Amino acid sequence: MKKHNGTLILALLFLISISGCKTQPPSQTDQKSERFGSLIKVRTEFEERYIILHKHTFPYVLKTIYESNMRNYSIFLLKGTLFSFYEYIGTNYQADMEKIGQDKTTQEWWKLTDPMQKPLENRKEGEWWAAMEEIFHHGKKHVPSAKAMRYAYTAELIGCDLQTKLNLPEILKQADIQNLCIYRKENRLYTYFECYEKDPDADREILERGLNDLITQVSPGVSYVRWSRMEEVFHTD
Image (tube, rainbow, N blue to C red; front, side, top):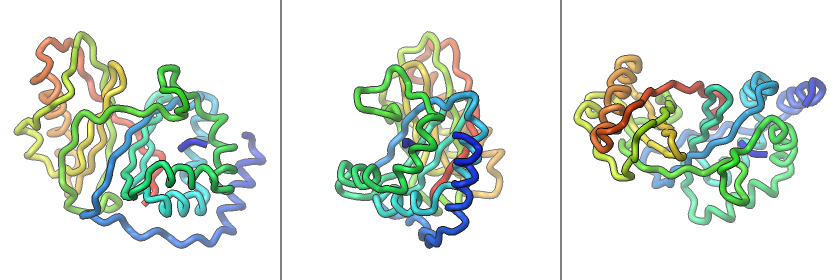
């Protein structure tokens, strides 16, 4: 999330303890939505604090996110890189983002989180989190995302001129996965997906093989694809 010291963390925990925000209802599986993936760095010295902070997000920050039509918002971390994924179900994205930016509690939250983050140099003008291109999506939801097991992986591509249109390999149809999204930022791919059955380890193995097939079928000359799992450090629903 976009927009420290020990006393700020203590103040944060106090604010959380006195806040009386209601829990948001679960996302619906049949809601029409747009999907967004973006990237930012977390400064090494703040990584642990960032994780703790997001496990205790201000309830009114979560309330504002929900009221601004954002759903299923997750942030994943690997080696100092943060990958965010969320779905938007509203009709006026710009107005909803402005609503979040004008919220006083959110502004206080950003005062804590902004110093921990380091925006990518190749982001577009005006961006804090760098937006990514979605190049693939598959998987109608069978259960709400909050009830599924959520995963994110990233891969570096070397010697590959990846096309933007991908076809689903047969192997991926064997896994009980939903909401599979692949994003691209220069020579890296980021994928988000959800397992909705009780054997996610087996499904992840199928998915990893399928993702490699997905890339090599359109780019036979690829010399390096290795998917690394990212850790979820934040989720809204």
